Length: 160
Image (cartoon, rainbow, N blue to C red; front, side, top):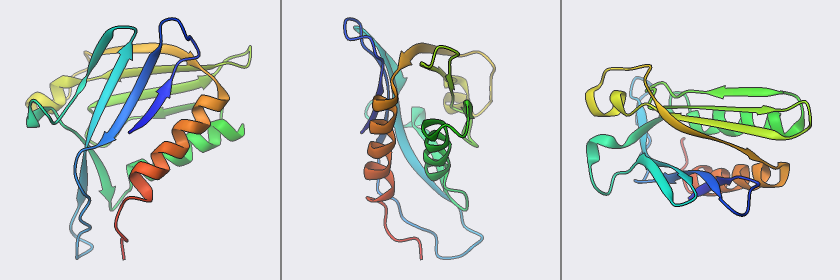
């Protein structure tokens, strides 16, 4: 599981992305490949998210082929961490969540994560959402990027 934590050590907030199934790459270019992902937002003792354990219909789908959205997210986060971007906005093709991360004028990193459970439960995209916001550090952002690579890229089968 890849986890991006807040800089606050007293009431920790976090965003977690976890693989729910193995990735099987398509045999033809016309096929698509989707990965089931559990997405959880935490703030202190509160927890909110999509999970495959209790209700399969609430799994958050992420495209892995023809576009690898995890790889895209890693590249966007790496640009933010490297200082070539000040803001990233990531919303998957199946818009179950939106992630906005930006550098502040003071040099901090602000994270906004919004869940749209309507799309995953009904198949209809809605603007209504619940979410969290928190500040994180460069070190925690780099750790999150490394965990995403470990859990989603190095664990995936070869796409040849």
